[in-house]
Every structure is written in C-alpha cells, then in structure tokens.
Image 1: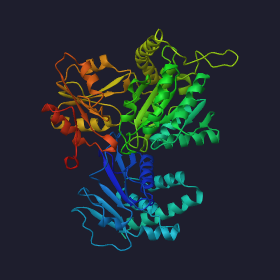
Image 2: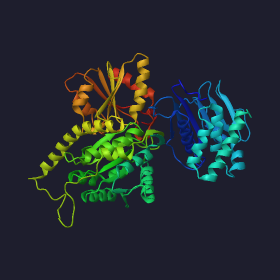
Image 3: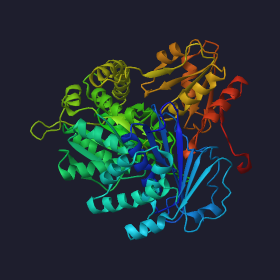
Image 4: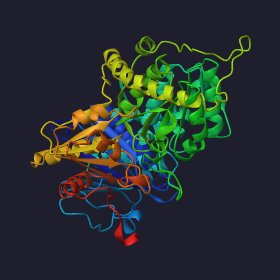
Length: 188
Length: 386
C-alpha cells in the first residue's frame, strides 16, 4: 500500500559524506518510487564533491508531474548516512512534524530531534560490513527507508538495485537492504 | 514508453534517435554525462556515428563545421568556458550556414570559477547567428533536439542551433521521460540533405573573403533565415506534437496569464518553480501568471506583445546579467520593446547566478517588488558581502 495518493508532494533529504553513495541512494530511491507508480525526482546538492566532505542529495515523490526545482528545506524525511555529521551539519533543519529521521549510527545518542518526528536509528554500517564487506551503508539505508515510509515497495528497490549493479553485487546489496528493511519493520 | 533517467542520459538517447553521422565534443562539467554516454553508444555499436575526440572545444566545433560541410548530420555539446572557447567558430558555422545542433548545458562563466548553473554562457552568444531554444524539464530537453534538427536542416533555414538546458538542475536530475520510438523520429526527421557539399571531385570554397560590397548581404541573409526559422519552429513544433504527442508549436508558452496582474517572464527550468509559486500565490488571491520563452533567438516579439497585452506589470526573471546595462538583465529590454507604448511596467530581476537556489518564496518576493515599482536590479544580494 503506497501512501502518496492524494498527497501532492513528499520530500526526502539525504545527508552524507562524499564517497558514501548519497547521490546513488537518491537516484535509486527515485527509480524505485517511479517503479512503484509515483512521479519522482532525484538530484544532488551541487556542492564540492570531495571524498569525506558533507554532501546532500534530494528526492521528491508526488502523484503528479513535479515542476519544483529548488533544493529541499522542509523535508518529510531525512536519512543521515553518518552520525558524525550531526555535530557539524544541521541535519534536522526544517524537518516536518510527523516526519521521519533515519540515522545510521553505531550507538544512538540523545539527538535533538524536532517535536513530532519519528526517530529511527540503526547500525547500517555493520550490516554493510557483514554483507558487503565494505562500510558503504547506502543500500541498507534504502531498505530502512522503504520500511519506515512506505514510499517505495521493496520489490521496486530490488529491481532498481539489479538494474544499477552487476549480478552478485546487486544480490549482496539487496540482502543488505532486506536486513535493514526487516529490522525497521520489526521495530528494532 | 515512460522511463526514469538522468536528464543528460535522456538527451543522449534523443541524440541516438536523431542518428548523427559525426559527433565531436570535449568533456566539461556539467555536460560530461551526455558525451560519455554517446561515446559508450558508439563504442558498443548502438549508434553508427564517427566520434571525433579532440583536444579542445575550439577543435570540437571546428570538426563539426567540417563534417557538416562534407554533408553529415553532426552533434556537439558544451557549456560555459567551453562555449566561450568556441566563440570564434560559432560565427563561422552560422556564416557558412551549416545546420549544426549543439546542446548547451547552461553554466556560469568565470572568473570566479563556478561550475553551477545560470544562462550567461548561451545568452552571451545571442548575436552569433545560432537559434536558441530553452528547455524547462528533461522531457523538453529531449524533445527540443528533434525540433532543432528539423528546423536547422530545412533548406529555408540552414542555420545552427542551441538546445539549452540547465546544468545540474536538469542535467543531473533523475525524472520520468517519455521516450519516442525510432520509427517516430525517423518519420519526423528524414536524413539530412545538404545544399552545398565539400567534394574533392567538384571543389567549392566556403566561408571565403567578402569585401564591403558583399559582407552586409551575408549578414542580412542570416537575419532573414532567422525570420523563416520563427515560422518553421511553429509548424515543425506542431508536427512534432502530432508525431510524439507533445506539442511544441509555441515560441512562448502561457501559464495562468488570463486575468493576471503580474506576469513573470522566464526561460529554462526556473519556469517549473515559478509555476508552483504562481499556484500558491493564486491560492492566496494574488493574480500572477508566467510567460515562458522557449525561443530566445529568433526572438518572439509579436507573440510576447500579444500574450502580455492584458497584464499590469511584467517581472522578467534573468539568469544572466548584461553588466553595465540599465535593466541589468539581457532579456528585459527586448520584452520592454515588445510592449513599447502599452504603458505596462517591465522590470528585470537578476537571480540564480552561479547556481544560487531560487525558491517559491523568492518569486513571491519579486512579485511584491514589482508591485512597489522596484526592479531592474540584482535580486537577493547578500548585503554583508557588498
């Protein structure tokens, strides 16, 4: 059951560091949303793309053609790929009441989340290390996003991953996404 | 068929459907994804074209000029400093009447260095004899390439053209596009039939020396061809609509202009954000509308005068600056000229330079400025930096 029908626009802002795959995550979430029947739009914040530097990427979801081109200042959802960003970057800025914050962290802290926001923390890096052998957590976080928001169907995410990555790598990434999806759905 | 893809890849797919015989380009951000994808298509045998790699944009466009003169359909793409580097060749391509089509992935010009979007690069080539079309979204970025080739290669026109779309904002954004079929594009765009061809067996010269007795008439001929391009953009844009279901017969496009007090005028991807801002303003009782300019050259003076005849004021949103000019933006004076004698106020607002984000609230703020009679200015300056 997808939840954007009748809702004009939902917005996701992804915070990460250069090299963590934030732009790829935005693109694949948009592809999966499109495959799930939505109009979607994904674009990067056009900043300095140095490895390790804070970066942002954005996704919009709608039930109609998306015309708006500005960056996202009042998201419904955020994904934070690296919790060390929180002390330097105002990741919660503008996050809407009723919104969802998904934070990748080894150890959840007492984050200053805006009122009415649902906080989801998970160790997506551990999932990535277990499954992929690399600390690239973006695909696990996509699974968490699918479970937490319902904006994308898991099967659509699977096909987006198969489309982007070659055979065995795609299957490993799907496994990482599935683990995070199940964790979030079970409320872990 | 509807697919979701990056804007640059949508344009590369359009170019594949157009079947150029020769591609020559030099990679430059944010044009790179187009030419990389085309290079892959050629290498994989998905596109039967000669891909000429060169050491500069000057050489890229020179190679295109030569290949076009030899009778081939040619394609190139560039942006910003790359386009500036082509400046000399632009005039030669137009002067030799070669129907080269080039994607301009709009980006600011240095210095200071900026890889981000504005329209300074293409607007600064206004008088080069190339027609210039501006796209609002990925779909239009694709579709205008079909139209551009059809118009450029028509024997009543024979002029080169830019298809301009915003760097990053469109080139690096994933969004849905409807992909026409090869059959549709083959039917719409038959093979290029050159008028004069460089041929060793029947040697001719092109781009020769013209004395003062001849030069003016060559320039006059280009201007006449621009006028004919204006008519053909309408008819060929309509035929494109009949072929692929999306009509491009308008040199301009009106959005909620009926009963509008304030009309915004804009080009490119900014039009989408302005449309959303207009819907919000209308919901709160502010009567605003948009006139999107799709063809900047040839300039649709009569169409603009007609579309804006009923409004109280016009706010031209400019992603360029004509430094030292009275209105600041380059488009404003021509809109004002189109409305000369009407008594309608026309103001320019320079915004979105070097990638600065433009939000709906900025459009609402500009509406308020225009009502207060304030315009011909840089909008949103950071006072602490001045």
